[in-house]
Image (cartoon, rainbow, N blue to C red; front, side):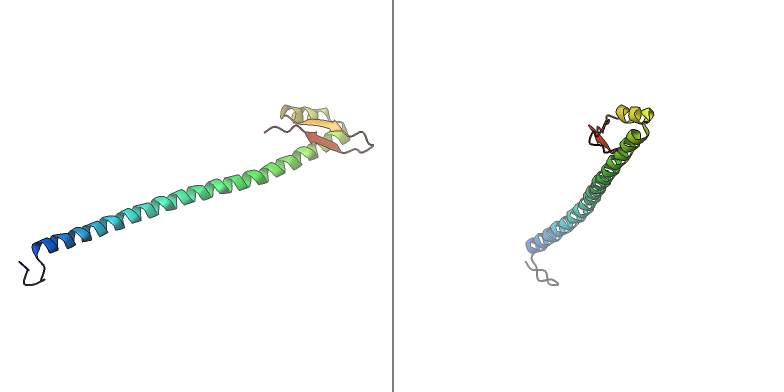
Length: 108
């Protein structure tokens, strides 16, 4: 029997309320997923930034090792050679009359 104020039967009233409740639950789930997704995205961005910085530091480390190797060859400083060797870097002098050094076998 329809309600005189809304024109809905009791069954229709409860079905519409059920859909309204379902919509509310879906909105809450969507909100939670939004915040979870944002947190995951921030973590992924932080990891990408770390990777980018690591690549830059790797290039810098290579340049520093090459500079030290050249200095060791030019000055004959055995302590620099030992320092490089302790870090897995071998220093070889070039034989072609060139005083430049070559750093190889770098280990991180």
